[in-house]
Image 1 (cartoon, rainbow, N blue to C red):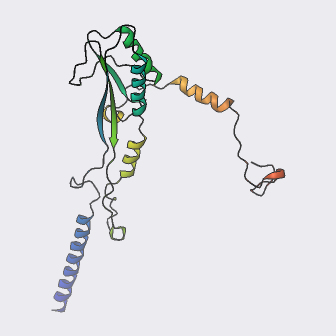
Image 2: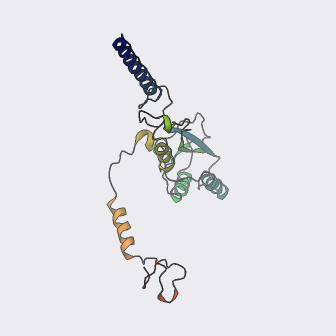
Image 3: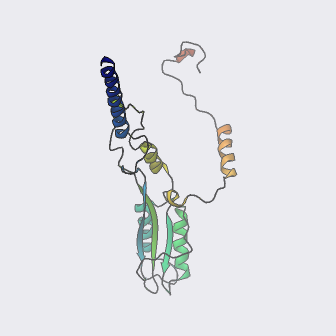
Length: 224
């Protein structure tokens, strides 16, 4: 009788332990289960337009050039922006050349394909279009794992969220997050230029305060 009671007690204790372990494991998944929202950067394109009216045959007027320059300055146009010109049927070539010079001064180039903006310019006018991609970082982490109860050594919820946010904030051209950079080539000229600058420029030596008369702040003599 005693042996039967002891055997039943051992079986009951083992069942309780397995139930507790199963509950811990089910409450702390170590992999993405599809329920929790995945942390990812959202990339959206923003299209901005500037209208150019009544361009003369001899090119843009000074006020029109100033207006374009102000438009690009307010946008802080630069690397990653795509610029196109939707021109009318009688937009002068001289005016087109003026727009091209202003765009090149900002380190950009006019795209070959005109953007679709749903508006037609005047016959002797044009619409300057700037396409820009922006990144919206995820709002994470939005949950915290209680490490004191992490019996299965599960990963933190939305593990890697910081890396995703850093990538979205550091990428030079947000469009690369969608299409990648298909160039695949490295610039040997830029690499050589960086090495030359590193070797030829005079290095800046920072001397700690209190290191006058040859005394070093690190307890030695002769500085760094």
